[in-house]
Image (cartoon, rainbow, N blue to C red; front, side):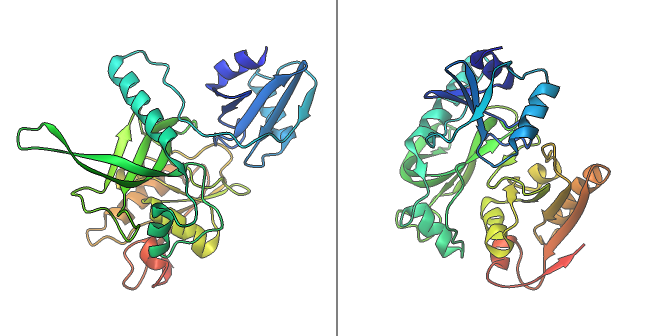
Amino acid sequence: MNASELAAALGARREGLEYRASCPVHGGRSFCFREKDGKFVFLCRAGCDQEAVVAELKRLGLWPEWKETAKTWHRPVIHPSKPAETEDGVGKKAQQASRIWAEASPVTIGDPVWTYLKGRGIELPGYPEDLRTHPALDYWEQDDAGRPIRTGNFPCMLALIRNPEGRPVGIHRTWVAPDGSGKAPVQNPKKVSKVHDLTGGAVRLFPPREGLLSVSEGVEDALSVMVLWGIPCWACLGTSGLKGFEPPTGIKELIVFADRDENGAGQTAAIKLAQKLKKKMAVQIQVPDGQAKDLNQLLQEGVLHAV
């Protein structure tokens, strides 16, 4: 088996001289590899133990019979993987998603998304690869006849959605004001661009730590968890996404941060997720107390209580 055959087996994408795929150990798309001088060169950028990676590849029957070595390479640009489907509609959506993602850049100090997040109390030393700033993304609405009309363009926070196997399946978009002072003045500042099935997926902001992972509904909520407690958190994008979430292999403990909605929808979704997973791992639910309705409000006020 050579590098290209391994790439096909893992659903990897080519990025310059190397391939990037879902890590066989923790599931995040951080496993990079290539063939160099007859050797298999690989690295999990999330920090997975190399012996564990080799063991899992051997278990799957995918370990190349080459002398292995490790090397740190350049930091590649992230692009959503192109779809295997040939259906025109899916192909066009994938092309559009790839174009939008390529037009965006990492969140950096002073850009509109960084300013927007800072205004929400979120300040981190660095932001995830799967979170980007688009400088001016077109915003579309429908007129009374149902026809799409472009109403302007605004800076936009892009969050890559990955399925349970770690493959990109869509992009969550949050349009923000040009100066980052808040959301953009549009009817629906948050939308999802779906390319493939989103079932069980999430925005994988931070890699799990020693089997520990947490989940929340929104991107801002997940980032708030990292600010408050340093716990890796993924965004499931709403109650439907929360109750349908499928964690990657290797998770031993899951903390579910539920919104405190007046109708109880957030807590209900969290309970359903916990019931689904309780035989596979330790699960606990945390809900904001006081006046805070979600984790981002909790960043500035409120306390937690367990359910």
